[in-house]
Image (cartoon, rainbow, N blue to C red; front, top):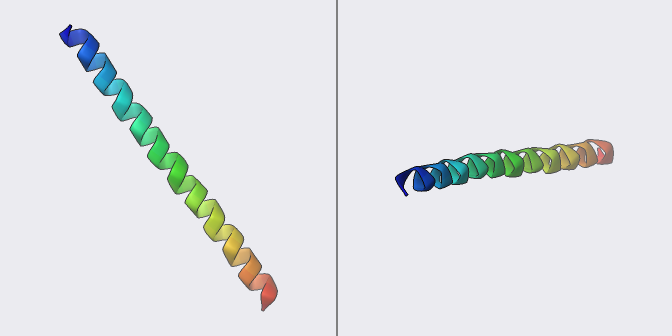
Length: 42
């Protein structure tokens, strides 16, 4: 029982960190696209 709980907790933590990195990467991509549009407008 404790082992199952530990494995599930670790899995949630790993997927949570992966999701944060994915969102952060998507944010950077959107920011870079916005910067490129801004630069081309100048």
